[in-house]
Image 1 (cartoon, helix red, strand yellow):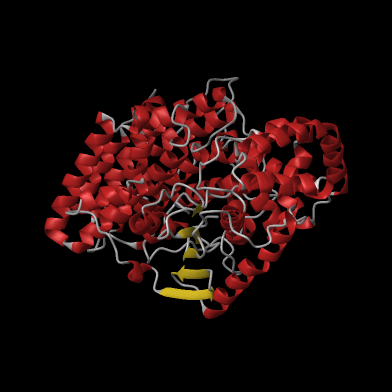
Image 2 (image 1 turned 30 degrees about the vertical axis):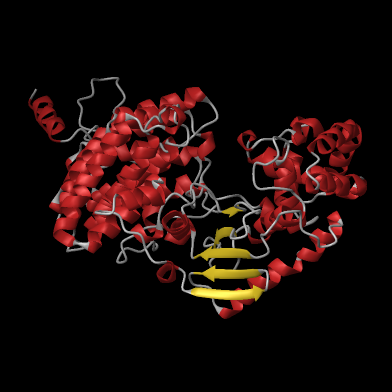
Length: 601
């Protein structure tokens, strides 16, 4: 009896102490944490842990880790186990995790989140936050799976809210700053996934949890300024901007009461900040909440007391003339990079004119005789300053704006950014693809964007893909090979709209253009001629005729797939990376690094 009473007292102190029960004769005692497994993890170098070659990154080992998390009683073991979970989320078979395995993980995290161990350990707090957005910020193809993950996350969100309040009160240090940063990131990362499926289970659960309240309370507190640095407040603003995007939208784009209430609350909060910190507070609001809610230039001007519109020369100090018809505005390109970019653009013009036999003659009433290329440092900078300087939507991967070509003062512009995810190399994302849009609008399609009523998406995007990539397009051929059995026919491809998805819009459209270029080049030229002369009826009639070539198109697709061989790089297993557009580079505290102890990919 004495032993049972002592055990009960210990269980009150920590819900993790699962090995302290009295076992009756013939019963099996609860298994203790696998010390050898934990030791293997603890001694594994980070480079080896975060690797496809790590033999421990399988579902059986994950199950061991989850059991051990529920049973471990010391910080060092939990540190190793939770860091293992992070490695598994990048290099392990995440798509093979079962409902039972997720249920076990959720139970272990619930016990951990309530334990004294995590209350006293910034390192474990950091891990807890990362585990939440790496394992529960998912969008599965199966609604049932999404429902289950959202319900499991719902039990963990109160623990995250408690952790935010706890980490905010901790004295600043490297360890506590990592914990606070990852806790704030957990909100934003989850919301960034959820908001892309507004009616999905994850988004509904995040809205139902009223995450805005805890984030607003934190952002309004003095604790969101840390050693006079505002990175915690800026990260909270960013998460609130994503919460704004996750809210149900109104009919015809009208602002709903919930959206207006959040906007008003943010302005009040920012006004209080500006009263204390001046222009620095304006920058925090603008780059934290405003641009990440995609509020745009006009709203920033209307909120002039808290929102900051920069000067163009401050953001884009470099102007480089490629030719009489082409110049680049850049944020950070070197002379060599500017020269490379110019050469890439001008070198494909000849291919375009030869393919469509344009005779280098522009369409009637087209004054877009020069293209402006705006090249930002990365997507984060494009997202912020594309809105503030050029009043464009930046919830995309870059864009070409043709404007009104009949206007003599019109300026055609392509907005792009450095491919920041290939840091060792240099390229501007979609540079050649978007330049084809300019050539197409200048020398082929009459009028501005939207002039023709339908059946132009396949032409615009397929042509841009084909001219910019030619026959060297392995990423497209890989998809075509995988999905050949469900290939859309030519009639379907010709009717493609942007809402039909990336594969239809870019990959299948590319294949249709390439098929015509190889087997019906004269028809491709006639299509371009009809568009140039604003004869849409002829264009549409010819598409109907070309749709009759379906049998030949199907045979040609089969031939392309048979000839295609993936190179070794394409065959290599992929890392389950973070969405490269999920976070903002300027939000990361400068004193925190993604080093071997804090890996992310």
